[in-house]
Length: 214
Image 1 (cartoon, rainbow, N blue to C red):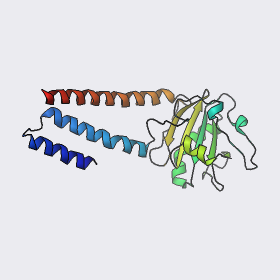
Image 2: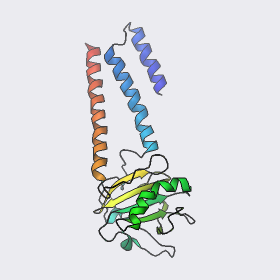
Image 3: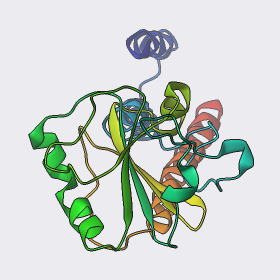
Image 4: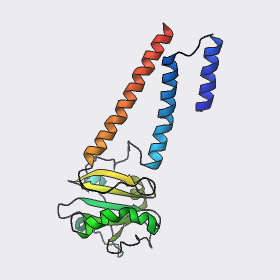
């Protein structure tokens, strides 16, 4: 679609006997960069904005409470989010290799020190993390798991009754090197930068169109 739009725009300017000026070229490049950046970022990381009930920053309440069950189908939710410590959920929709599980080494170390709560959430049996056999595995409804984490394997952080961060484990894992439970400020900064870029693009689009009309 972008290729077709580009050819069409080129024909319009050519037929009107106009040449691209630096504003139009810059705007075209900016639109192309944004058009590719957003989907690629969402693929390798996670979508910057999630309109499902489990977006980063969302307060966990009765309507979107995270339900967890043990192997005997007993609800263990109340026993997981305890102690006032940041809680990290490793969501797995498929088995992962030891190499990929190694990305969780720092997080696992903090769990062993007792600084955070940590558990695995999956919707199928036979799922475990190589080298992290002491991390409890709980079961979650498949639809809920997909709603919370839109990737095959990733990490969700909870703190103070909110979701404060989400990360894709398979491609660009978050480096767990401190500030546990305080990730929300960083996520808000990234969103602000995203909106800032969109604002600049909007101004350039309006300015470029106004110049063309003149």
